[in-house]
Image (cartoon, rainbow, N blue to C red; front, top):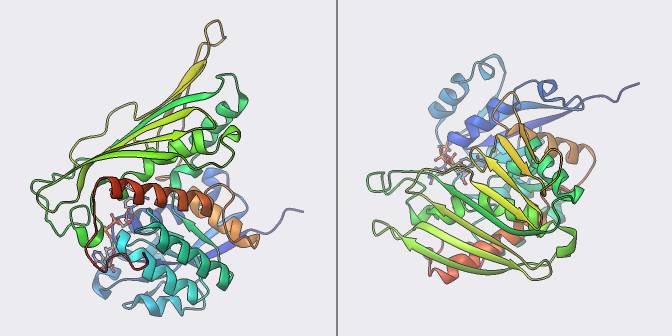
Length: 364
Ligand SMILES: NC(=O)C1=CN([C@@H]2O[C@H](COP(=O)(O)OP(=O)(O)OC[C@H]3O[C@@H](n4cnc5c(N)ncnc54)[C@H](OP(=O)(O)O)[C@@H]3O)[C@@H](O)[C@H]2O)C=CC1
Ligand SMILES: O=C1OC[C@@H](O)[C@H](O)[C@H]1O
């Protein structure tokens, strides 16, 4: 007899752009992606504006047919007994306060990237999650894509030998000469700039290929970085950071920009005996090209990954499975990896002298 499907009730905080994409994905039938064991219910949304929440629900053909509670105060959503897990879709600087409030209300958490504004905030959140016995995961959706599982398979198979260098970039053109200085990408009060918004994606590929490598033995890399800031608001427009993994004798050369389009391939992982290239946006690559050592048959292998939806649902399935199984963290995107990411970003900001306005970092 097959096990019953586990159903997770979601409360969404913030009716902005990424929340809309996440909701659209979780309302797709999980069977379209081969997930027969979990399903998702949209139970409630929290927005500072009731009108905006109604528009948010009205914009999605699926949600108009559902009965979804709307809360104008985020804290009221945390008290809704029907909400099992809260998705935090707010600008970076609000992740800490809102996740903490939801944790204290005993809700499981999926929190957008970067998990917090700095590492001390994240460590405090994780301690609170542990104390309250709730699951917490940073929404690093790229780690849960089928293409990422394939990249791991190729690395683990060992035909390419040891990884030596990872090159990865994520750029996005936000028209920074003209966009409002209030926009979250420009506004220092919302920790704007490239490193915290786009940096998590080149970094995830360094974590997949190098940090997770068994020979790295869980060692944190050393960090060297450089930043250019936009004179309009002094947030970083272009940042490069290099990570050295001494145990592996391997390096990641990573970058992110908010004033350029992305380029292809955005990720190249070079090994002793071959390479892996990923094309398409580095947050959701579509094609993987593996170049095997000379004489291999085949010498080159290409695979394209397609699925229904945007790809944010795979991480939601992970949350549902972990909650079902009583886990407090994911085994794939662990607390350790989120803390590592925040520690790297803290160091990059320190070396680039990117100081956030007083009071923005709630724990220092
Ligand atoms: N995983 C992914 O692919 C992506 C992740 N992100 C991450 O998601 C987060 C949100 O980004 P995004 O959805 O693009 O941002 P948006 O600006 O589109 O939405 C953020 C929402 O937060 C709420 N909010 C509450 N307080 C504020 C405030 N002071 N200023 C602005 N908004 C506020 C608003 O919702 P309301 O008014 O309804 O309360 C707003 O709509 C970021 O941390 C970003 O890194 C972003 C894009 C893609
Ligand atoms: O997570 C993200 O991915 C895509 C980018 O355009 C966006 O700014 C960022 O937050």
